[in-house]
Amino acid sequence: MGRIKKGILGGFSGKVGSVVGASWKGIDYMRGLPRKSEKGPSVAQLAQQNKMALLRGFLLGLDNIIETRFQNIEKYTPMNDALSYNMLNSIEGVYPEQNLNLTQLLFSKGVLMSAWSPMAVSTVSNAIDFSWENGNFSPMCAADDEVTLVVYNPTKNLFCKLENGGLRSDKFSRLIVPKKFKGHQVHCYMSFYSKNRKIASTNEYLGVVEVI
Image (cartoon, rainbow, N blue to C red; front, side, top):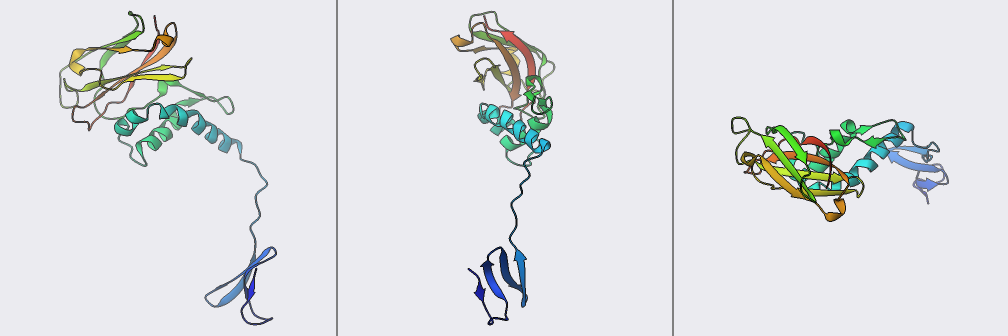
């Protein structure tokens, strides 16, 4: 309800019908109420919304790794930085046929060195064996860097993770996966995290492996 301040000829404050009265620096004025837009979202907006929907739930399966190891962007929170990065780099196709490109997925990002010649194979039932080579050790490639292993099963839409799977110097680590993964093809990733929990490497995609 509007309120008349100075009699019938004065200004008023509040809403009367589709008009709002107000005062600014002693000047009385009226303005119409804003109209709701009848236009729907644009294709670009729908594409962006779809990208977010594809990624947000997916990345939550890796939230504990992302929160500590998605580094060197620091615009928002690590999860939001990972979401922003992967929306730009890990989605392929044109809306509405957009898909997540798992070969480009990053959940760990940092300046620690990666491994040489990393490999992932399944030679033991319900297990994935990861191996790699080492060069000379250094502060950015230390013998006691901890290896992180991640496997994603698209059939089950499940992750299997091992955050401390041994040391860089070991050159080998095994990830035991659920029995229901048997016969399924899984995507394999590996990264390193410094012993002092401060520096991470950018994760590497090692390809698709069929679990025996």
